[in-house]
Length: 463
Image (cartoon, rainbow, N blue to C red; front, side, top):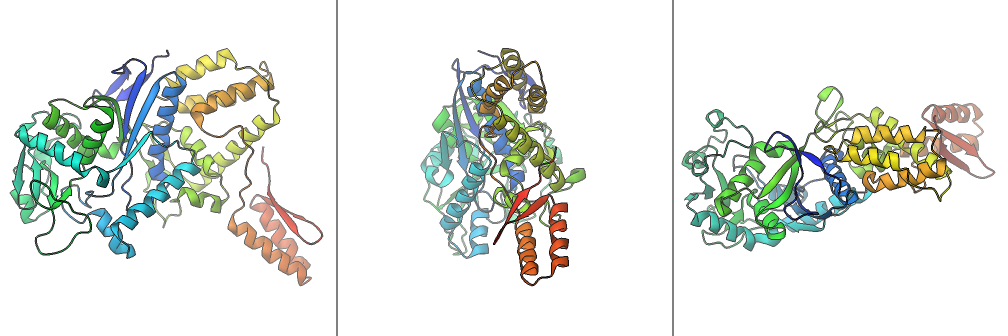
C-alpha cells in the first residue's frame, strides 16, 4: 500500500499517515452552519476533503468520513456572546429555525452534487445529538474542568496547561471584546461555553433543551467532540477544517478531548486555506466574485470547471478567484473532456504515469502537480490515445471531474436575452440591428446559427 504524507497542524510538518487500524482511516470533517447559503468559497473546503477521501480510497485504504451540520449553538461571536446564527437566520427570513436548517441543508447538498462531492459516510446534525453532548459535558465536569456562571457552563482553560499550544496562542494578548457582565464572570478570557442557558428575561428560544445545569443549548464546540468520538471512537485518525478553525474551534475541541478523556481525539489535524478575490481581496457580491454553485451556469460556466480550478490550487495555499480565471478554467476543463471523449475506448492504464500520479497525490495532495501531469499525458505522443483515455479515467477516480461524460452546454441568460432581441429585430426586418446583435453575441464567445423558424446557440470552441 502506497505511503501517504500529510501536513499535520499539530506538529507543523508533513508526517506519514499511520492509521490506528492498519489500512483503515477515520476522518471527521467540520461541516457548515446551516443558517445561510454556502457559496463557492465555502465549498473549497469540502472539495479539498472530498479529494482527500478519494486519494485514500484510490491508494487502497478503507475510509469512514463523518461530517457535522451545525444547526444550533454557533453564536455570532467567538466570545460566547451575540445571537445564535440559527435564530438570527430564522428572524431574517420569517421561518422557524427548523425550516431554516432544512432549507440550507438542502442548498449545501445541492452544491455538493453540482461540484461532484461525494456525501460523507455519516452526516450528523447537532440537534440530533443533544444527549451525547450533555454526557460529554458531564465527563468534563466530573474531571473538574468546568464551572458555572450566570449564562452557562464553561470550560476552565487554566486546568489544561497546553491549551495555547496547538494554535501557538499568546493568552496574555486575548482581549475582552464582549464588554459585558457575562465576560467579567469568566475566570479566564480564553474560557469557553459548553452549555448556554436560555435567556432569563422570558425570551423564548426556538431551540432549547433540559440539562442537569438548566434549560439551554450546547456551545458550538462540544458538538464536534461529541459526534466525532461517537462515530469514530475516542481516538481517530484525521480531523479536517479551515485554517480559521485553528485558534478557536479546534483549539477548544482539543481542550474538550483532554477534559473528557485525558488525551487528544485526533492524531492528524489538517487545514485548508481560504479562497480570496483578486489581489487577496475578500470575496463579496458587491465585487461580483461571489457565487453559489447553482449560479455558475448563469455566467456560462460548468460547475465542474470550479472544481477543476480548485484542483489547480494546493489546499494549504488556497485559491485566488476571479470570474475571468474561472472562465479560463472552464475553457481548459471543456477542452480536456472533449479530448478524452474523442479517443477510443479499450486502452490500458499506463503504468509509468500511474506511478507518478500516485507519488504526487500521496505527497500532501499535490494536486497542481497532478493537473500538470494530466496535461503532459494528453500531449505525450509516445502513448496511444486509447491508453491516455484509460489512464485519465483512472485518475478521475481522484479528480472527480466526470471526464468520461460529454459536456452539457451551458448558455448564460444574458446570451439568451440577446438572441431573443435579435429574433425580434429579424421579425421587424431590422437587419442592421440583428447583425449587430449577432456580432455582439460572437464577441462574448457564442455563435447564433439560424434555421427556418428558429435559431441555435452554441459556444465557440477556443484552442
